[in-house]
Image (cartoon, rainbow, N blue to C red):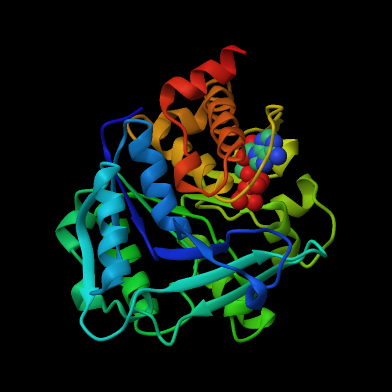
Length: 320
Ligand code: ADP
């Protein structure tokens, strides 16, 4: 695990999950509080593996915001990039798996503090000191966090950071599917490394095929690595010179929340000090084996953050 700084930009929120499963939100007798937000999960994934990570985003100056900042710090994530909004409250999501297997979401975003991060509130010094800048989820959707997102990307790029993008499509939060596709693709060519899920690949290409041809249709000339995650089928990788796939580990899956964040965070932690790995297929495959193991372990416990592994857990799974 490398020592260079990985900055993860975006939102952090609390998922309220009913204490019993199979009921609607209205019928839930109570809720468990699960901290989440893809960019925050990535920062904690890196730190838990022994890497250096910072989170840049905005929280409400309320009980939940201070709880989330505390969770980042307890996990060893640098918190100098967090700002607190004096007016708006921390984002909340109510998530339940209904008896029919459908996930039901309700959001407190009205607007929530994460969406109110302004470009002038960014800790530019922190961003400039990073080796890798990771981003992608809801911050592209609305102003002013959209402008903050674009500015942070630009500053990171100018400072020579590797830009890592995980679109983390949250379709219900976009005004329309068309707008989501357009906006995601509008920042596509800025990234050096992109990770998409199989579902996102289908959405972005508009094709229901998940094969090399559809993945390569998303290729752009500045890209160093394109990753497609396939859940229990592992992951695929594409570079200018080679492509292939790496099998998943067999584990007892309980909850897949955070698997993709664990996967991408671990990959960034492994390449931050030596980006030549991206050009060497054998070394890249060994990193992806490690990242697949991280993703697999993350599915074995409820919630994202509690399930993110330590290096020793990953090595134990790989050794078998
Ligand atoms: P995303 O959040 O991007 O959809 P995935 O659910 O595909 O991410 O998970 C990321 C990685 O975690 C996968 O590429 C795989 O290696 C691992 N993983 C996810 N789900 C499972 C599972 N059920 N069994 C084993 N490994 C898994």
